[in-house]
Each structure stands twice: as C-alpha cells, then as structure tokens.
Image (cartoon, rainbow, N blue to C red; front, side, top):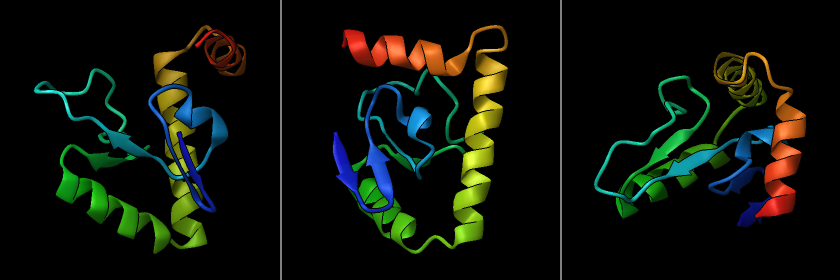
Length: 96
C-alpha cells in the first residue's frame, strides 16, 4: 500500500478510505470491478497510465475530489446494495 498526502493505491478496501484512487491493474484481462467507469478511480493499466494518473491525482481540485468520493459511494451502493460496506471492508482489512 502506498499512502501519500492525497491518494491511496491499494487493491483491497480502497474505497473505504474515500481518497482519490488509482486502480492499478496489470493483468492481461479487464478489471472485474468497473471502478473507472463509475468515476471512482483513475486507471493504471500500464506504467505510463499509472504515472499519468498519479500526476492527475495531485492536480485534483477539492470539487473533483468530492465528486470522486460521491462516485465511490455510488459504486458501493450499486455493488453492495444489501451489505453494510464499512462492515464488509473492515472484515476484509482484518483478514488480509
């Protein structure tokens, strides 16, 4: 996990922290979760894209950060409509 002043890059539980997110995905497949489509994360599917996304994150306005947080909440509601996301993420974090 990398924790910088304004960004969190981590495979699991990223949305829990409500920070700007970069979805680093280097597999030869499409990501399972549509974080980028929702506006919940920047894409990082190559070295170049990851570097560009890191630059973009540090240039975000407060309004853009808030919009990303709202997109993350929308994503969680769509993908975890019955579960309590905080309880689920806490469980994942404690058991990784």
